[in-house]
Length: 396
Image 1: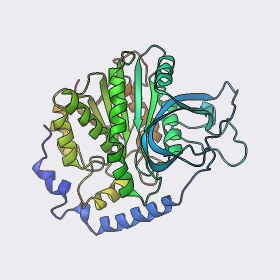
Image 2 (image 1 turned 90 degrees about the vertical axis):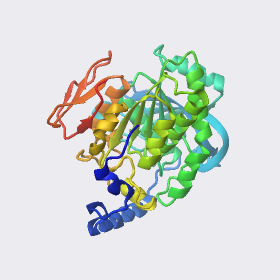
Image 3 (image 1 turned 180 degrees about the vertical axis):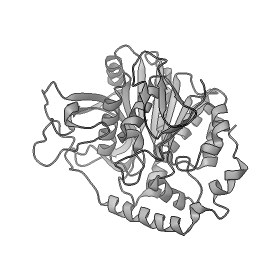
Image 4 (image 1 turned 135 degrees about the vertical axis):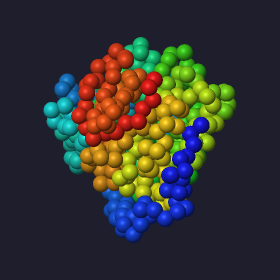
């Protein structure tokens, strides 16, 4: 199993002096928390789920299934709040996306007050509840016979609308042929509710386990990819661990698990992987040593390193042996002030994600200068990307 190199052990556990915890880092943390307080006040218009008819053929469309453990909102235009519901609810949400010549990949264009312009903003065209039987009918129709499903689990500080629009953007930009399924748990959408959100992931574990087990059992599903972000990665790993402990393994239907900016204690991640057993999905980790959100999480956790922000290069041999790929996004340019969402907003990272979801192998050259996406599947992605990415990947 993954072992911890002696040279990095003190950095990971925060038990010895190092540059990571220098005066510079104290100042950095102050800046981080300042940003968090600013972001806590951010919000979007409250009526985004009032459906609007869009007939423009130039716009894109993402038709997704949403499973949630959130409580319904009293405001029907919001659909769900950040409080915890008693069971799992299913929705079918369709989002219209502006034409490609009106936006950049990785960009979410929130609708403004008044009547939104589908040429310039994301617009919800349909929002309705679903039963389990209706969900299976939706999957058969949406997967187009490919029998593939992409499950997205969002992170901390994410409202229901945030989760839906982010997943719509990702699904559209990577051009996946898998049926898109969003699992959204009760985050209050506030940077000041970290502890509440963390406990909401624990509360919601039953929901994601149920969703995974239903997908695994279904004869209509042949290939499952799970994409998780930030705090949602902890929920995802716990759910997969539970599935493995109950069934004796993680089903081979679950082929890929992508952990973007994982807010997971390194030791906990190691234990989760061990308890899944030898039959495990392929894991890809997006990490950045410049992730300010995870720097704040590290501070809250008592200076215990988070998987998505420590220097994973010393772990290369162990990760390769365990079949875990790491995409280093430290030097990747992104719009997010906290450096926490490169996987969704940077075009190169989106292409790397598309390649992984298409069951393609990802390699780096010896100099670590560029990223090569070697096509092993049927879907075509750009074969060469000149970028500052450094990737540690198993030869599989």
